[in-house]
Image (cartoon, rainbow, N blue to C red; front, side):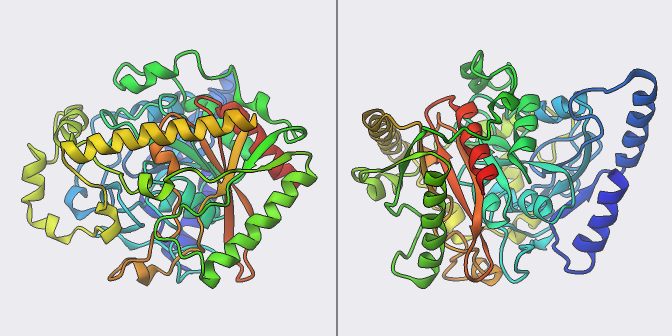
Length: 454
């Protein structure tokens, strides 16, 4: 299986359509696969992912491979050890196949000074989204069995939707970010799988969730995960489920009067009817008060130096002594960062406003769900079709148009995107099921039932 995927990477990522979604292939992948084959003959399965080739977003550490962040700035950085999730994957028997492209430094669309731009398998002129565009495109193109991405600003769900795959941003605290660039002490970021089926996603969650003392956020997840997420794979899971349907536009720089927006809306409206046909009780969601105003309050906590020190402090050979030294390096001038990637406000006052906005939005959404007795809210994962690669390379930067990021504010809730079909232009559309804190098993159940019904 590993050899098959390596051949596909060579044929379709390096050559042919040149999707350009893979930065580094694990030089030990075939050797690891051979060892697992031998172990199976003598001892049986190593774990639930025995021999499964996994793709990692290249901000996750894996020993023997560089963590480049898609940037020439870090092309020679080899971490000393695996990140927490990579270690869990290996112990479960997975083969780390390769590292995938991402928005440079984990921000914005999937462009980087180290690799260029990644293409969408459904239209090579369009972007796969970001920042986990490489994981999304590579799974879509069948270059690996499954992938792990990271989401802070729809960075798992947007690539999932635009590449026609499934992706989840789990409730913050279920999955550790230690050994991942831009992890703790940040809160919004969360690792999650991108897969071609909800079944594969559930199996991946079973492996990667767990408490890690190096990521204090995971203390909130203790006791919250089920024995197995595969128990949620119920094909009748939508029968009687109360689903609040959100039609209020909330996408980043969305254009509700445009034809592009309408094409996605047509697919979403059809998906809502499919939910009803599968037995769901569909409830129109009232407008969330001050939604656009609250979403505009997004701000950074300004703890970039602390996050840098915690991440690179794991290594005996950090690439730079300080974050400031990195920013002063000649290579830093080559970094590609889109206009929208840096739109979060900074400073104590802005961050205080953001926290108040997040609290207000959390209470508003949870109260609406309680009043409606809703099991989940469903909304468009992205309100526009995949944008052109060229639109992310220069002004006016339309690359993130339509991105829904309400879950950036509702930090403690899960959001899962599942394919909903295609626009009349042949481009994939996803719908998101958003739930209450730690209702991840329920969201998996709803997504699976929808997948099976369609």
